[in-house]
Length: 101
Figure (cartoon, one colour):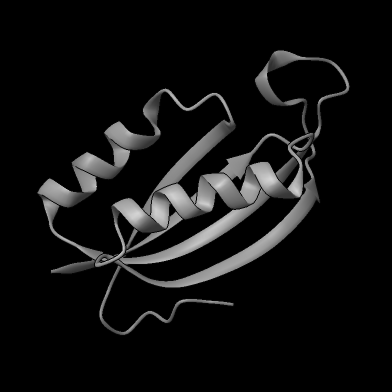
């Protein structure tokens, strides 16, 4: 199985309970693949997200995954139409790369 860093940008106006609900759903669905979680928090972007003027913030989460291609595809499908998300990125990690917290 390969290691991946899943970086998720949530909408900045979500309440703490909405963020927790999102994270609980993700963890319950893919608990065997999620190794570590880093809640980076609210960050200011250098650009307007989703082409909306003044929308230059996002709440970031980073998750260390250990998964094969099938599970990774299921994660993508799980996240694809979630209205709470602004962006997702999945980075492949080599064996020597460390997950940064």
